[in-house]
Image (cartoon, rainbow, N blue to C red; front, top):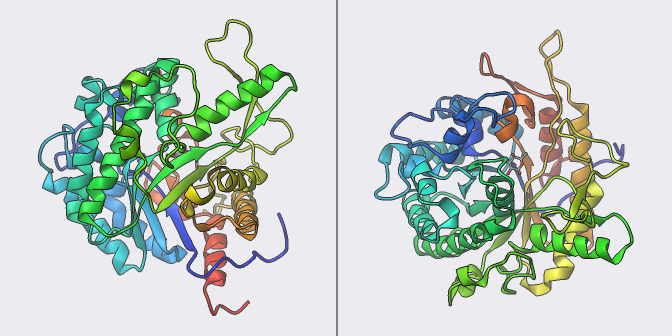
Length: 449
Ligand code: FCB
């Protein structure tokens, strides 16, 4: 870790942390919430590494006041949470469930009272199960349902949410959920999952219109990006790299920024109706960038169903998820977005960045996580370097405030600045929490440094 002081960030730079509803809330059968695809998926044997479910998670639904106090103590200017669609519309259609909206209403008010800007994501993968029973995001109608839900959420919260994010990581939802079957809803369709891409993007575009009609707050999407490292120097390796680039980094960005779809196998034009690309390209105010690691790619073996092979990258330290720690990848990615999209690129906020380590309290109950501090330090410096290069980056949200229910990994991966003992729900700020608090405080205009 560098011993040089953290460089200053531009005035007004947004410091935040992110969470998502299903990973922290618990209370899955409370106040009229309907089932989501993650409830169903987690109950099917063998789907979740440790056999757990999100039924209790961090019990944030009942402990939100304590969690807002943790945010206030950290000094963040913003908190990115997600709204559970099945709380607002238990079956995915029809009128709002007022009790579900009440929860977010209280949360938003508590955040504002604590001086923290509410940043709300509408969809962090928790589709109401009845919509999945009607074919989920494979079905065009789901896009229209999503816009209706966006309208209901904005009607209640639009006067107070400071930034709206439509979808979280539509690439990951498509590929892990519908392509490879390792996330809910657990379908394994490989490239036949393409309609899921188009319908999510269409839902995004329709939701942008719904939000604009209800609120003057800025609107964004949060995409996952991974810089591609081509391993091998055959033409076939480079072609494989380009195919993966198109799939992971461009499929959900080219159409959003008015370029239509990149060339990709399996992209069936029949799902794209006249006018869809214009709906999808509705201007957004911010591009949310979620970054974890680069991806090594080379030509696929003969007979592979995919046009590339993904290969582990050597030469990097690794997190408990076995993901390479590569802050240079974040710097490179921000430059790539800037160079590739030019004037069409809106201002960027890093909406997720973080790491899992096996953090545990010591004999005194303290949780030291020096690896996370080093990780955040290096990634923040990478963001600062990109700003110096001329990339307009306006915020950085750490994933995550709390250790939480990490999807198919269950409770085994701890990403929090705050340790959670799942048996007692006791929260213990880790040393990275204190470190980040000091970085944020030192970045305030007028701070003595
Ligand atoms: C991202 C997800 C988030 C969390 C982190 C580790 O892909 O958006 O919910 O799982 O990874």
